[in-house]
Length: 244
Image 1 (cartoon, helix red, strand yellow):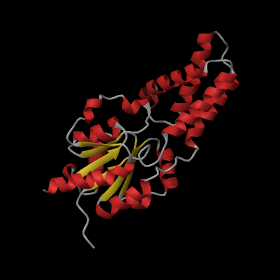
Image 2: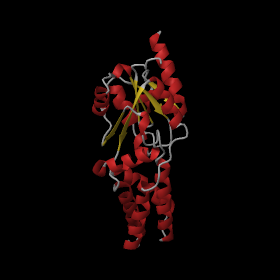
Image 3: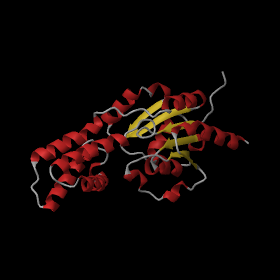
Image 4: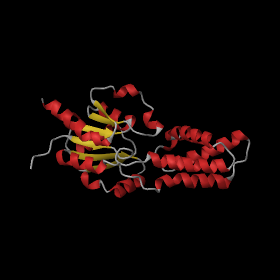
């Protein structure tokens, strides 16, 4: 058997290996239906919820309470602006529906299993995912992707220190490591800050994940993919180029 490359590839979880943003879209839409039934503007509710939810990151981070709280706050702000009373039962229903995003199964991306199988046959691969531990662990368990990884790490924040810790635990270094993910601020920028290569997957993501200067991907160390299935070829070709 041919020995594995010394290269380490660190994958993101949410919206890279499994889909979560559509779950948030569905929950927001269902909450908007409740708002509409209360006689308020559903479209305006969805706009407000997105804005409030991004603002709430500063205070609530990735807590599972943030998204449903943002939905309730959007309803209350909309009701107040319309001069109507805030109805407690409506607020409670909106919170309950919005919180369902954490109960529903996040579907595994169509090519995730094949991609990880290919990558694990040639490289050491790791999972570095951020969020509330219980939520992330549930998604990892339900995905059944854990056996492919040499290391799995759940963190509250994906920064350069988090990447350095993973590489240290795998006895690797940034110069022979890649980060693969859909988020510029979480998956790409901190990896590049310590000298890793990166593949940014341009996919449907939460607005917070696109809130960084797009020019940061105009970088020789960052490759852009439109689908997860492109990752093995991108990394493989880059490694061949580097060996020449």
